[in-house]
Image (cartoon, rainbow over all chains, first blue to last red; front, side):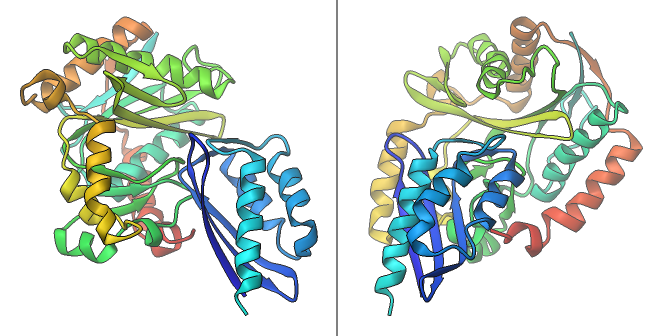
Length: 96
Length: 258
């Protein structure tokens, strides 16, 4: 089940999230968009860290992973990313 | 402070280059500056053919109509830097590579955008455009964006590249980008006209690239205290740039990775 969500950060950037779920577990998460993140690799590590998580823990995990130093995201907050992921998760769960 | 300058106008830079090679040169500069083989460097450059670049975190396939690019003879490349999709044609592009800790490259990312963009702002004012820095990373004239800038930090160096728009080709640009719905294209073009401007519009005349490049040099000298020493890419940098262009910036593994 795949969910996609475009999430416009108020006054900020466009997050384009894609989430693949299987039996309530995140198989793959992609957080794309026109934001900046430093270092770039740390963002990709946070993104990869979502795989294998149960969807119930996704929001809290996203807040922790994308808010963890040294990663800094400009143009979207960890809360924006978590919201976009949750919206994509709802799309995925509706995709039966 | 001393900056190496690579500029096609005065002969130290190449003529307009492909998207892959332009991105390869920027990355090669990071390598040579980080190893201390090259001094801090400012490069002024152009693109041929025209090129769409997307930000590091964007999906090329989702943002760019690759078929339209092919049929229009336009390159498409994913950047090392974040940010959005940019159509590089009627513009002046620059890159600057500095070791972190250089007076223009403090630890604070927002502060370094401000310090480097001050050179661009001064250059635009030199031309008669009342430009101002708009945090985080834009420069505007009369509230409309005229320059976008993007930064990454790797190997202990800052790489910032950006554009100064000399002309606007919104119809062509939107024919190369994917828009949510075809019927929205007209509205997107109208919105962009309200938000974005270019030197031709601001100055009321067509400016030669050479004049814009010269103004930018003056701006960096005046606002950043830059003293330029012109020198082309070294043979090693040139070789590395070509390798990166071939093995990274023209491959689907890089361009379509996200």
